[in-house]
Length: 227
Image 1: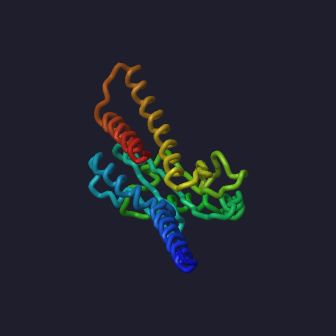
Image 2 (image 1 turned 90 degrees about the vertical axis):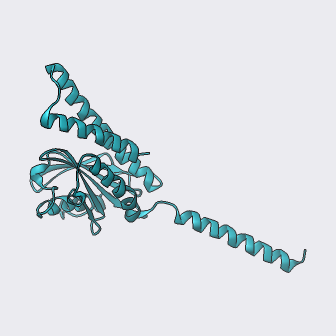
Image 3 (image 1 turned 90 degrees about the horizontal axis):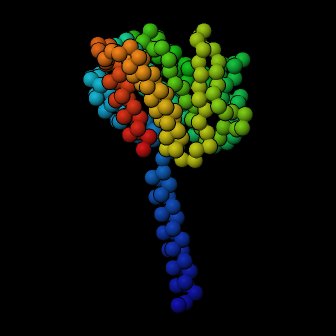
């Protein structure tokens, strides 16, 4: 084989390898838009399973603040919102970028504003009068050591807690962690409800039966979406 032929074959091999890497990277999950494409269709399917026809009134995609708000109807007049703030920042993200209490800036306050500002608008069910508790997740691979655990602050006179999700590698792994948290929360809530009914020797009926059913369906949804 001549030198030119060997160089040509080496070049073609290198080009093919680079193409394969590029193709693999293009299929790797990354960014806020990818998360929306994965979560929203399954979420709408869940809403239909609990009899919701106007799905658009239960969720909000805030592209400006990179925050997704999913409202889960538990019973009449009661919504459980899950907020997921996603940052794809690659450089180190210190605490000052996550929660600057003096200036009320950072990922924590972006997530809070996404919910509280939207809740003031009409034409949907993510209103504060329908919300008793909420779960907020700050998802970012590059949070530093000082950013960890649960961030608790007051916003608009309401105590708010946000769970930090970091060092997960691919975004899909970070979202799995989010849904594991939600699963544990809903599972505990459903167990408490059933234990209370058992202690009182009564069967669920009316709003309580709807509450139990929707918690169970939500648990199934979280189990499937976390796979």
